[in-house]
Length: 252
Image (cartoon, rainbow, N blue to C red):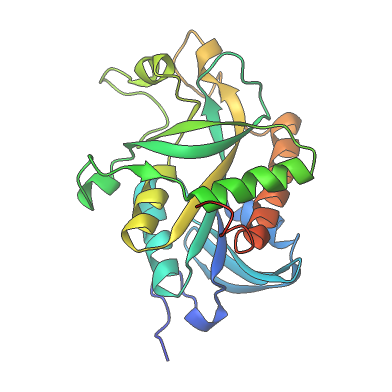
């Protein structure tokens, strides 16, 4: 019998092979409510874990908190507990001016400014999403008649600016779609361990339209347009987890 995972405080036998990972413990609770017969199987620090079924597929939902360092602990312990397929469902800031608040973005790959993955493997190692999971996310969004964007996501280690120059302008010019704080770490950790990972995001603001740096005055992520997008995103992500095994042969 495997030991209890020390930080998540979860028994590996309570984990499914597929996991939906989210930053906010409240969002984990919201996602778990969409499952059939959900059961909370762990709670420690920012990490709250549930397991249930969605459309017949056993799925674990786990919150990982804010930032790649803490999130990497969650991802690693889930892997140690037997999870092999991950979808991150989170919020992000749009970097292109034509992306509206509440829009869905499927992350094809990530720029590694997360501050954690570079201590695991050199930065030359790519952070890329599993193509079968991307296809599953696209298929799930299409089946729900949901529109979405897709592109590269930049993962950064900070939310608010400091003294050093921001790289956001560079990534805007490079046509990066959005910025968030954990995706690159998930992609790298999953790839290094032979697992599959992908991600879908809801925009909660647009940095391309702001003249000032991010601050409490101009960043308000909890709004109806964002909350509505989160509900759609969670259902798309859960459906994608049920589809991924059947689509594994669809890509050569």
